[in-house]
Image (cartoon, rainbow, N blue to C red; front, side, top):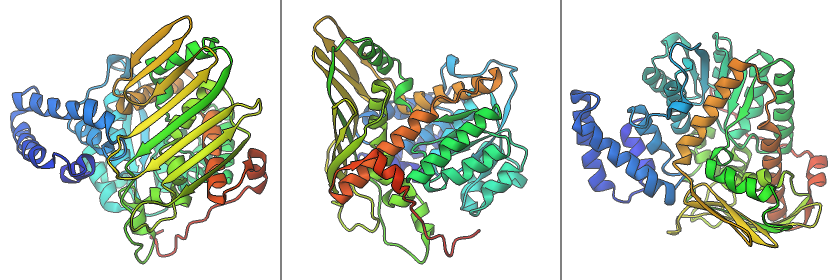
Length: 454
């Protein structure tokens, strides 16, 4: 990922003029001055300031690559608790998906100290080469085209991290587990019901083979969110009466289709395709919906709602506006609001649990809160976009080294994806659907891969 590309994706056009001048001149100077220079401190201040304020409060989706750029420059060191002790065994890791998120998270694996980036794969060879250069991966272990992941699996890696459109997850994860590898993957795990079932099956096989399988959700790793959940689960709100979740973002560019799918695989354009990315409710909003399931310990049984495509000049079929009402077996009502439009609203991923005696709010950004008749708690969520994966990367490492193969992130990841698929389908069809109905339908979403390099 180039610095110019990172700036364009991260800054979204605001304040880009002055920051471009500072960053361009500072990065060039830093390369000459070396670590610890005054210029590096300036760059660190700029990037961390943006990450903690503008990034964390305005546009989660657009600023993902700023963290990538900062990590690539070595400006965002991990906490000691999230790194491996010196001299520890290194796990040979393969990265599948070398776009903005993939390249960025590869740097987190590298910073951890417990991994050796052994191989990379991406559909686009220039991305695989760029990432390979950045990570010092030998040219013989940089793979491309649709089948690049197969050659990566055969290259001598012990584990893979999957950072590709969800449409491909089931195929890649199944192949990795069949080869006896550990799997670390992004969310959502799939865009359809068969994909969800395939991931559950692959994770079960991983457990039976004594291999680790971890799905990278961040909100449940945050200490403040964990404290709010603990108070709710302990009964601090009394009987839970209602749940509300919110997912607001700016969405992604949705350019016209070209002769084949290639341009939809670039720069997160694929989020605009339901079959590739699971719709906006399943790709972005799923963070807050997953948080609700994490607190409640169960998934809904039915949903109804409405949705539409509201972005100007759309070319993909993903719905960027939705309102969904979920029902749980005990009658609990869960309202979800989703929006992915560039309409000046601040990004938000929020889950609020309402009870008879108070409420508890979990956040991706801002501050969490718990308030009841008996007690009050407030806590800040600190840089979760980076801190969450760093914790998960460390957990993945320790599980492999210590032989913990329960793989307990998978069941909820399956439930969260199914919940988003249920809401997506109910809203798109404008009818009430049950979870049992979509499981029986077992509807598979297909993507036309004709013309792509195999």
